[in-house]
Each structure stands twice: as C-alpha cells, then as structure tokens.
Image (cartoon, rainbow, N blue to C red):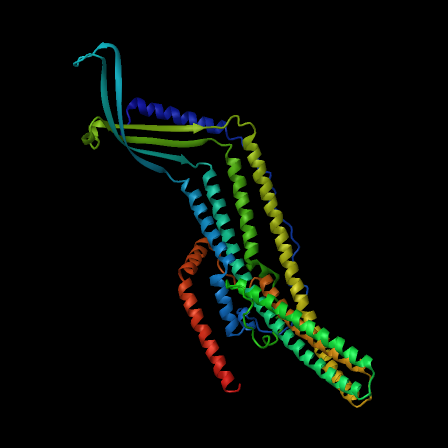
Length: 522
C-alpha cells in the first residue's frame, strides 16, 4: 500500500504529535512499593538430628509396603479434590494465554449484504397505477479489519507476566496438593492400622475381664470372696465391652476417612494391615535450612507476590499514552461477482495516541489497590516462610521426643504386663486382693494402648517432617513449570482408565498372595 506525498506528510505530523504527547504525558507516579522482606534464618536447624545417617530422597516409600504404595497411587488418580485442583490449573493456564493474546494484532474477516429501499416524495411514479417513486439497492461488502496496540511501555507484557505467575502459583498448589494427599493417605492408613490394633487389644482385654469374672464368681460362690469382689469385676467387664464398642466406631470412622481420600464409597469396610510399618530410622544431621525452598506452597506464595508486583507495574503504566494502529481493507459493490475485483477495493488506516488526562482518580486508585495487594502478598509470603520453619523445627523436635518417649513407654508396657500376670497369679493363690489384680490389669491395658498410639504418632511426625521439608532429606529440587504441570494434569486425566486397570490387577495379586500365605499357615 503506497501513500501519497500529502498522506506521508500527515503521518509524519501525526507521529510527531504522538511523541510530544508521550513526552508530556509520562509523569507517572514514582515506585513507592517496598519489596524488601526480612526473615530470620539459620544455616541449619536448631533442633538436633543424628549424625552418620545416609540421606534418602525416596522418603515416603521407606514408610510403606506394597499395598500402601498402591493406595497412594489410587488416591492420586481418583481423589476429587485433586481433580478439582487440576481443573483450576487448566483454567489458570487458559487465563494466561488470554492475557498473552492481547499483545498480538487481531484480525476479523467480514462479509456483509445491505439491501435498502428508498421513497422519493413529490416525484410522480413512472410505473403503472401511479403512486410514490421508489428505488431499491443492494450493497455487498468483503473486508478485513485489523487492530494492534503498540505495547511501548510493557503494560500488556506486565499483565501477561502476572497471569503467567498466577498460573505457576496454581501449578504449585496442584503439586503441593499431590504431596499433601500422599501424606494424608499415609497418615490415614496408619490411623486405620492403629485403630485396628486398638480394637484387638480391647477385645483381648475384654476376654481377660471375662476370665476374671469367671474366676471371682467361682470363688464368691465357694464363699472364699465377698460379693464386692464380684461386683468390682463386673464393672470392669462392662467397661471393657463399652470400650470395644467405642473403638469399633473409631475404626469405622478411620476407614471412611481413608476411603474418601481414595475416592471410594465411604462404607467404612476397608481392611487394614495387621501391624504398623517398622520403626523409621533417625533423621540425618547437617540438613540445610534452605531445603524448605522446595516446598510447593512457598513457591506458590512467591509466584503470587511476583504476579502482584507485575500488576503494580502495569497499573503504573496505565498513566502513559497508548499507541494503537487500526486498518481496514476490502471491497464493496452492488454485485457479488465484483467482491474479488481489485477495482472495487477500499481501505482505511488509522493511528491513534490516547493520553489519560482526567480519570476522576481511577488510575491512582487502581495503582494504590495494586500496591496494597502486593503488600498483602508480601506479608503472606513472609508468614508462610515462618510457618514452614516452625513446622520443620516442630517436626524435628517431635522426632527426638517421640524416640525418647518410645523407649520409656516400651519399658512401662513390659513392666505393666509382668505386674498384671503376677497380680493375677497371686490372687488365684489367695495372696492378693482383687483390687490389686484389677488395678494391675488396667495399668497393663493403658500402657499397651499408649504404646500403640505413640508408634502411630511417631510415624505421623516423620510424615509431617517430610511434608514440611518439601520431600526427602536431599537438596534436589524439582523444576517448576506451568506447561509441564498442564501436561501432567492432561496425562493424569487421559491415563485414569489405564491406571485404574493396573491398580485393580495389583489388588488381585496382593489378595492372591495373602490367600496363599494364609493357606500355607504363614
């Protein structure tokens, strides 16, 4: 498209006026947002850890058996909350692409047909019968319209950058949701196994009280013991039966909680293993405090802060002039056959420069709001870092305290069981009162129950430590990529059926192996 000499002169004057308007209109507010943050950090953790322990990056598999591994994989496929997080990730990715499209030229192709009728009042009709003179006409049009805003001040680029950071934050939410879900399945499984063991312990205790009741009533009927002894034993027997009922309810609740995490129907009938995993090893010493930088929730908070800062820059650039180019080219004729004929072509080229002069305080309010939101995200990020540090320190402290308590609780349980056996034997021989036997047996039950609970708490503390550290004890970090996360989510959605079939086959193999083991008297 060639411009005439007067057209080129017009465009030169237009661009000169635009540059002058830009120079006079660039008095935007200064950058008043304070991006500094002061968080107290240490090179290593304050809570002690054991030296000489090898570092392991495969943290959660060391706590689990094959069945538990399959349960975690099942939850990652079927958990509804994780699926919702995946959908939010795809929505954030789409929003980022929408913002990026604003930086590119847009074009629209149009085809139109305009048919009109006009009446000429005061003119005699030339046709038969007289009447008002009229005319009809039809105009066909074919055109291509384009527009493009020149992003000289990076206003649109900053908005796109903010949307990209939001997408990264949502990806990190999804990644943290996967890790948290795995930890929740582990914890729910340990709680279910512990509840099953508590039920077994209570049932064994109930049998002991039933044996006590038989023994004491026989001695009462023989006139060797008073009726008070029989009533005291009956009280403990009924208390034991009530405890079994209570623990069965808790066991069903624990099964339902795990079934919900797995995306199953909450029937409360999920079978548990016979015992908790073997005691976990000690935590290695010398772990740097920077390990928490791997945490996806911290990465999400940091990306949301970066998005807020980009929006502050975009709000500041709203004060600058906006340059835009608009063009239309096409044909117009009374006949469709002429739409592709260049002799009927029409075109228009429009350039504009818009400088905000008076907006009623809207631009300044938008900038103030963006800076305030950035301040909020900065404080949120600082708070999450401190929370992460506290979680790690607390988990490390729990590791040490639980290990010490486990040694003492084990000793208490052993002594309580020995005392219970001795008290029962002495009562049978008539050398001890019934209250002594009952107290000893109660103490043995309480000690064994506390030991079971402590083993579960210790495993839970190790899970919380890994979750607080963002993974294992090594410093290896996973890449953060919104595109990669989108591919992962799409891959999960597409692979659900294959994964479900594999999980079903694995369940059949495990059940078959257990059946063979039971038949062989294992």
